[in-house]
Length: 315
Image 1 (cartoon, rainbow, N blue to C red):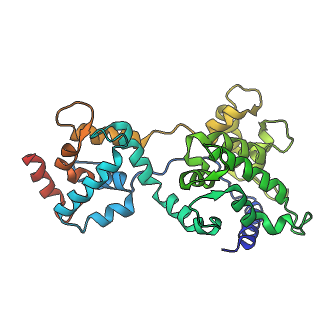
Image 2 (spheres, helix red, strand yellow):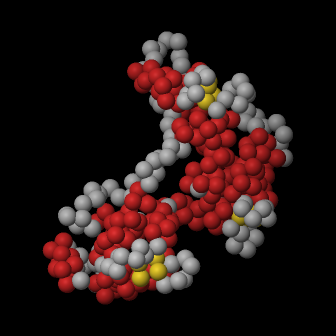
Image 3 (cartoon, rainbow, N blue to C red):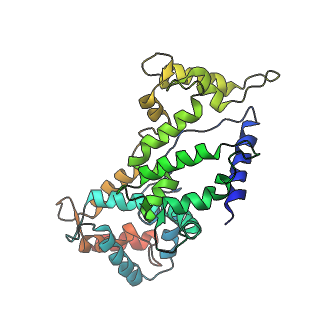
């Protein structure tokens, strides 16, 4: 992969985006739904399959025999049981569902990994990332494209250090994923908020005022009338974003804006799966309990709704 064209493409996309005055920029990060299907067990378990496996993986189970589906589910159960105590808890199940929903992110990281792991040691150091991404720009202190690559590199290094939880300046796969997709990790939320505030806070006072808030979303041009959504966003700022009514957003208010505490779909699904499968009601699932309800967790050639009902009656 050629990094210079990649950076230039990003820069051009930024310019293009800001050249459309009526196009709203979206800063809020919402968790994606676990499935595009309706969650109604009375009609079938497709939603649960998508939530438990991820939508792409769930489809692959639909072509398997019940026996093979059970076998593969048994392997998955052992992976979910993080402390290897023979049981799957709600916490472990929630973590698994969260991971299953991030598969597209891990696939994206896998595609980029080989470009940055220059010495093929299975790790990516800050030096490797810096040299691949910024090496040619560091040789030119005054690039003619008008972008401050020293500043961009400093921001990347700060984020890399935040993702590098053991502070060894080397990222494993999970740390590099947190670096590339910080909005997906709790310990990276502060850096997401900080970078957002730096982007929007034009006067450098450490806050986001109303003009900066609107200016980030809307590229005003005198000859055009403001679209209706701009007026709505002004009201949103005054009524909901600026919670202490001081005319600006601080770091905590900015976090509430861009990283809202949404309903935790993964937690709700984990509770649902445990409730439906926990036959002895001890609050956790054994491998046997999960396999007894395998059609709730995964599909197979036999999991049309009628046959699923028969199996549930048998259990």
